[in-house]
Length: 300
Image (cartoon, rainbow, N blue to C red; front, side):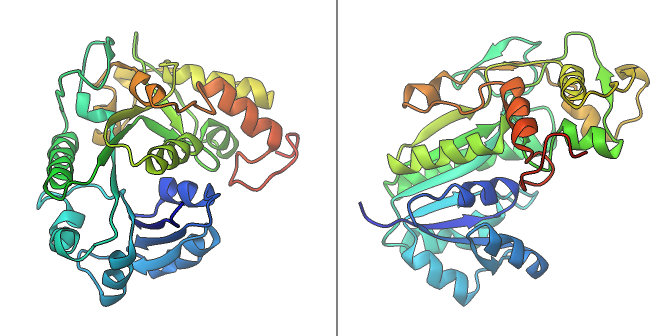
């Protein structure tokens, strides 16, 4: 098998999880806006580069060797910043490129009244950011066709994992149990984002895939379950209508749906954490829930 040369535009939380799961000794470059984050990328196995909307000579050199391109950068009003900066390079200066992945969001489906949606469902984006995501998805799929390379769109649900979960929120006192009747959300552990990416990259598989768990659930249930593991009393329930929320946080509650994941499973991918309970049980038992560094489950 040819050694992979991977380039990640936007090597944040999910990108670092993907790099840490590198079992192929692949070469991985990744970008960040802040040089202060370079060391964190290095610790994840990523050669860091700064990207602020324009291609540097260092980025150009890395792209020329890239076989697998991963984009995890949110679109802006002016369009997708990676496409704006790198479209010409992708078209003419990446001879080794085999595959493209774009990390999107299940927010593109909008509100379906709590009903099930799969990849064939109509996209009804409500928020401006989700409208821009739909446009970016279409642009990346079109570019893949233009260069005859498979493009995979991974629609991710609410991302959690070490350092970003209800256990951490309970410990630092920020956990809340907001209750909106019949509201459901899907979630995805960062290790399954990484696993799905590696699985699709290994087969150079293109298409649209919901990368999400099997158990859409009310958000307050997750906090209650985390509290039970910690042996603490969960915070009181707060009615959604009277809660103080940022406009962005409130907008998430304006979209209600159950997201199905049969398409990614049909390719042969098996989720490590098919629901939040399995993931929280694992994180609590091995003690990596704070930041990935294993601790005793009783060390709180």
